[in-house]
Amino acid sequence: MNKIIYIFILVLLFISQINASDVDDLESNINILNSEDLQLFIKNNEIVIVGFFDKVDNKEYGYIKGLSLALKEYERLNFVISTDNNSNVWASEIVGVQVENPSVVIFKQGNGYYIPYDKIQSKPMYNVRELCLKALNPFVDEFDDMPIEYNYDYLLYFYVDEEDKIANFELMQKLGASLFQEFNVKYIYQEKNPLNINLPELKSKFIIVTKNFQSYYRQIDVLSEEDETNFENITYFVNYYKSGSLDPQFIWRYEEMNWEFTDYVTEARPNIYDSIVLEPTTDVIVLYYKSDCPYSQQVMESFQVLAKKYIDQRHKLTVAEFEAESQNIPITSPWRNLIEYPTVVLYPATKTGTGTKRQFYVLKQDLGRSAINIANWMLKRVTNSYDEVLYSPTDFQKLNEIDGGIIEQDKKEEMEEFKANELLGDPNLIYTLFGQGRDQKFFSVENEENNYYIGNTAYDEMAITAAYYELTPTTYIVHYPEPTTESD
Image (cartoon, rainbow, N blue to C red; front, top):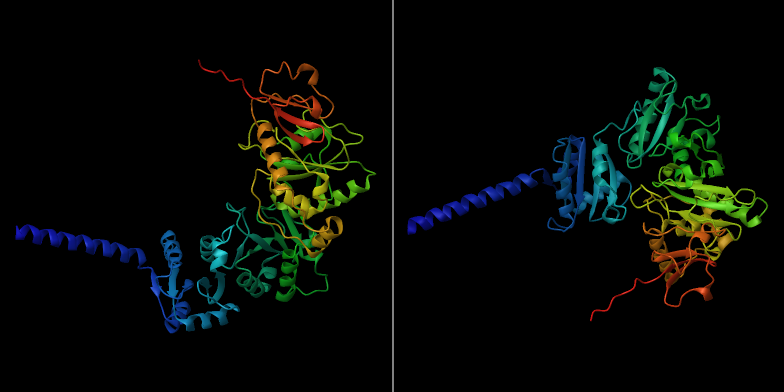
């Protein structure tokens, strides 16, 4: 019996040793260093990811551990934690800001890139994993093919020959190191390149290409010919772009070859209305305007701002306008109930990205005419998700001048609007009319076989038992409850 117990104890010890070995293997690529050892380690290794914590058993340690395990196949990535306050002091001198606990700093070739822990936890989360993978690439290389992933904006220098390229080597390296967290910095050959941009005015100049490759911004729109192409001036160009004050240039998409644009806004003409407005994968916001209406002109300016802000997300959002005084809204449009100018209508993408668009939202006049208020209203109703855009001080000035500040819609009113659009999305709904009484003659409230009726029904004519939602002052969705059969 004692022999059996002895063997059992040996087996348990063996298993515990294996488990301990597994844990050691899992954590073996994370070093715990004091300040002096940390400095030496960073000096001798190209890429080091450092977690700064008060103590090793901090809950945030799990993030560094998980990150190291997820990236363990990349041997050039070294993971370290430090609880030595002197490490924070030294790191703060390198990165130029106070390194607090907990936080992460990525060191690449002696340069430090600070990421506060609250930024890691923010939504959308700061993608440290992507930044670690980016560190595996050179600070600067050649833009010779279109990327597979779209994670960062690009700062590109159009060189004309090898001599031009070599002459700007130090500048490019300095920019690449400085802008590592925000941009891919690359050379691009002037004469022939994947973007098919070879304009003479861009010779030996920089451009910024947004990450979805649908727009770009030019150095020549910020700096004059007399301004030297040096680190300070190109940094000024980059910061001007980041302020949201610079006008973009189009990189055309295939779908847009037959479209027309006025000040960045898509012209939704009747002959191409369906291909623009009814595209199921795209959220489309449309301004229905009258040319000589001053309020229409005011909203048109706001639409121009919106179109510029979302120019790099045109594959998800179309900002369009439709001159509705001399042109009829096509009968295929889900919404046609035009009562006043201007009217803003959002047609969200379908949930599946396929099928027929049936839903729409009409912006009420008291919810504002400024770009910021229109955008806030729109983003609560779109189907697609969007990267955050930056507004300039001028945009906020316009917000206050036009609307007096941010306008919040009544929550109850907003929820009723959302409920109405859920009914609009019902595939069994008979789509009878909007606007001019289209198709109403074929249906009546009494004879409707389906449970839903859409129409310009006066309030006092509606059945009291119906649940209804007002879409506009004269347009309602009416839902008649299905009859129930009582059991004996």
